[in-house]
Length: 289
Image (cartoon, rainbow, N blue to C red; front, top):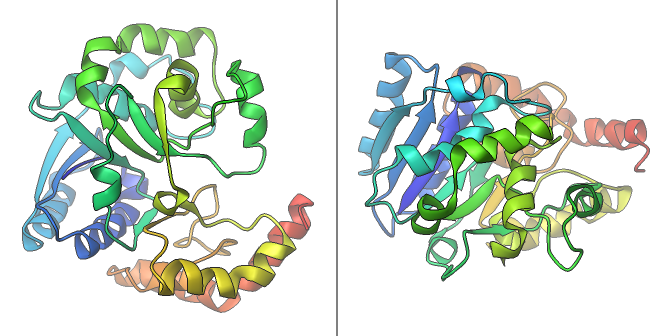
């Protein structure tokens, strides 16, 4: 199984948590991780390579020359989100398909079904974005409403088709002319909306609360999603993260159990105690109560 990830120093520790959870729950096949970065040091690279080796997997580090991104607008996210587009140039041609995973993800089940999805003539496979306000993205990007706006944090990529048809320079030029709030996620949806195969949200399950009903139904959701192993992948979208203070979302305790770094684990410990309080405060503050 081929896995693609892009990392900067700020998200290095969460990247380790994601890899730890991925390796733990996916022993059905050897995993080849392709890590795209521009600022990790040799010590950090050796650390993640040891993690992969210990799990009998392989990690291939690729340093990205991102000069082409110098004048590309980065609105809400980091420039590293664009790195997945560079895969058409940087990955070995032997890689015909690869699964891209954001580092703010926890893998809690097998990704075999997702990875082996028949994508045929599709460029990508991904799940519908369930964030608040995403229903307006189609109108903003001039995408017909019959198509879903996809969250790009989990993407099965058809590298054969992308190498043939994605012109990286022209794609980045489009963003320069028309800056997009969600960077390359908007870009991917705008260019390939009719060439993305929609998969179940069990492979990209959002961890944010959207209403008081979400809070009240959370115990049942946790039982159904985690205990009964319906959900395979939890995505901690948005600015609030479980490893930061005053985390406002779901599955904080679950994330806590996968952390190995002592300082990061200690920072998360307080979140586990006050998670519900922060969630209610968030809903009150955003007016979604």
